[in-house]
Length: 88
Image (cartoon, rainbow, N blue to C red; front, side):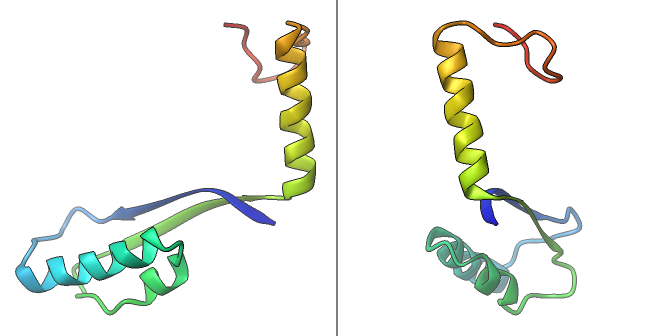
């Protein structure tokens, strides 16, 4: 399974201090490097809630489905019976 999308959110009950900003910067550096697990392991205050939501899909079947959809769109042959598919 390959991650195709991820979002890191922070809880609202958070007051920024210089110490907390340094921790956020540390988390940010891990995320820039693609190190989501390490970002979540950075020590943080109890009032900081981080949530990582990720979408994982099997890469090969997903790539084939996207390629197939691209070909159908190129010739405008999108089946109207497909749920969730809207013509623009």
